[in-house]
Image (cartoon, rainbow, N blue to C red; front, side, top):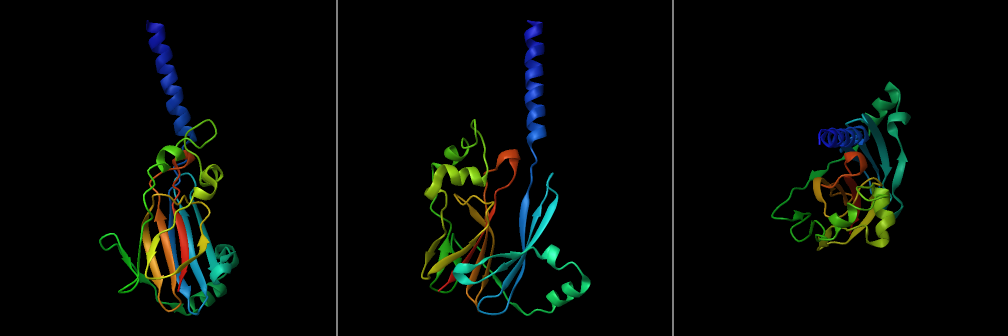
Amino acid sequence: MLTKKIISSLVITIIISTYAMSSSICEHKFVIHGKTEGEYGLLFLDVLRGGECGLKESFIISLEHSKSKVWTRWADYYSNDSSISAMGALKYEEGITLRDSSGKYMISDTAFFTVPIFDSTFQATYRRIAPGGGLGTAKDWKKECLSNYFDLPQFTGVKAELIYTYHGGIYKNYTFSNVVYYPKSNYLVLVTNQPERATGMDTIHGLLIFHLN
């Protein structure tokens, strides 16, 4: 009987130790610095990663409607004082932070958007997608669900073209942690909050950029 208890204790200890060693708990956060003036322009942002990741990635996203893409990592590109000063001298468009108003984010008096329709099957499906079962990653989720892996916000009174998607997010049953609208050029930047976690208990928040018509 005592031997069984000792074995049980050892098993529990091994499981806890394995979990602790495999959990990086990387919390990531998007920091939007601003968008330069103009119909297209450049969006500057940081991705801050806490936990064991302990990393900051800084990007310029070139906004060109349907051709938008990450242009360069400006943490590497702007590595000297003169370049940083030049970047600060750029003219930036004023952005407006939109907030939840009874479930709606108002773009204008007649145009708004809401979070996607809740998918009741997502949680159970996601939690078994990793090889052997359990939590996976954004890549695992896309591979598992193919065309059904992604839900867009629901727009009313305006046409919205999705022009950029951050690759590390899972876009199901999310809310918004930050929403910035640039009214002169009609760009909408959405930082999504995903309550589910990936392998290692890492966060899988996302970033969506739309051009509005």
